[in-house]
Amino acid sequence: MENRFIIVKILVFLFVSVAIVSCNKDNDPVQINNNKFNVYIVNEGNFGHLNGSISLYNLLTDSIQNCIFESANPPQKTGDVVQSMGIANNKGFIIINGSNLVKIVNLNNFKQVAELTVNYPRYFLQVDSNKAYITNGSFAGYIQIVNLSNSTITDSIPVGNGPENLLKTDKYVYVANSGGWINDSTVSVIDVNTDKEIAKIVVGENPCDLVIDAESNIWVICKGYYDTNYLRGESKIVKINHSTNQVEKSFKVGVAHDNFESKLLAISDDLKTIYYQEIGGVYSLPVNASQLSAEPVIRTQIALYGLEVNPHNGDIYCFDPGDFTSAGKVTIYDKNGTKKHEVVAGIGPNGAVFN
Image (cartoon, rainbow, N blue to C red; front, side):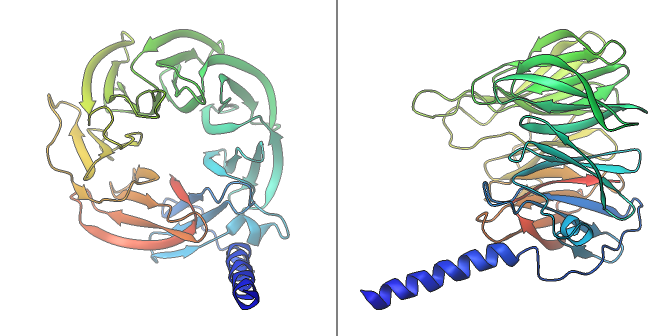
């Protein structure tokens, strides 16, 4: 028994050591040429372990630098649960919801220049040259208004429960109210000139992601409510006409209780094809389609943690978080579903930001 106990202690030590050194295997300076060939990969990390990070993937060299915040700002850690990242005015805004922080970095060298405290921040969006919004709140939610010239929060806008991703078209911002720890079924519409919510559009159960097409219409994926037995309800994709703010199309995705949560949405570089994941892989949906495709464009049995499209070339990025204790990976496909690259990122990769 004593020998078994010693072996267990050694294994635990090695496990913890791997988690600790994952961002400390080198202290090389960050090499950044701030251009469209840079892809910033968001690595969520393992909750409570301060091992979230940002990786820098270079398209030209097919090379990756992991833990670039740590390399540029020793001995700081990025933080606990790196949810997302946004870009505005040559600065990166790293959203860290476990630490309740937004770390602001200079994109030329990734050195930190400022920091904001935000309760449970989720996503960032620049809405004009001097203003940005940050979603926050796991229950009744708010949009925090950020003054980009001095990196301060100036006010907040109440929206729905658990606001997640957001996007802008014309003078309006659309916010997916995902329900957070409860439920919601709406997309909030905010007038950026007045910083006021002017409408809530009922779209479906727990909308969690959204994209905008070539005609400025908004597409939303709704993952469905969970019942008392934690069985998921019906998920669907809906189209909102941006001129009328009315739901114009609705597609049922999968079936209720199918044990798969459809919550990822992306759009092609020409803004004419929607991508989403369901059982069997990643599927495509042309914006003028009348029904869903029966065959995936990318076959995978992995429940992806993120799905993105590079707006410069149309490549599809699929994020595999692994076991949240060791490095995850990002697999890159062309728009026809042919695998091009695979890179090892940080712990729990969940998305990317393209310059």
